[in-house]
Length: 326
Image (cartoon, rainbow, N blue to C red):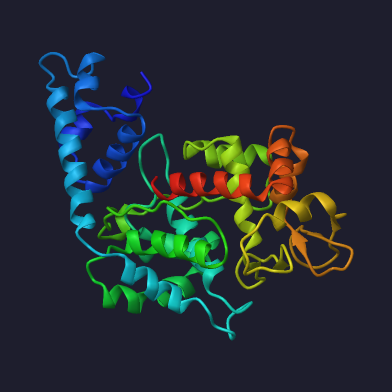
């Protein structure tokens, strides 16, 4: 039944011309170790509806889209991205954090309820998604990658944005992300998901669950992915918040979780939105960050990651791979 639940209604499969849907479903079915024969054996596709043939077609179309990508050598793209990262004139000396944020935000709009949004499409090229307040500042990342897209026109924007995020994580000392190609780009603004699907840092644990559950992610994956806050900083000109989470914002580590647990966080007195500061007033945490140690379900995961960087790296790599394949 869990395999069946991955498939949209037969009519939707029959009428779809969206290759992103087929690639996404192919990956989900592969992960579930499904095959056309197993789908038929479960009774999905028996009778006049012809769903078995649709399932066969889904596999063929998904494999075809992945096959187009597999003939291209992505190592040169990886190197081109890596060569772009260092810049002493930008933030803390690296574009890596903003590239991770681009990969995250371009994927984090997915909805399991209608299969809209997600990493396929690169719809942040269009309004209104480009102007979503949650995406403020990501024009820096998109513009940075434009010369690479021009150099390697074979790669889709969707693949380039997600690959760049993975390269950035690895180059900044994080785990290897098992990235796979095959995403395709949407053509116009009418394909943009609704604005407002990304997390709101001012909210609580219930909000985080609403956002991440909509993507099909778990409590453990919420906490693991939040560990990406070890990179970069907030800007008043973008989110309204101000400052870095850690003192080494261009090094991927479990330092974020350590600081959450071993620092006394107090409300910052200032004219901006609610955020928390450490005693030295050089680091900050957002309301959603502190939910990770206040919520009784989130807290054990956050504590485990603070104690064990290898565990965090393993869980983050798996969760990030899942996110960028939504």
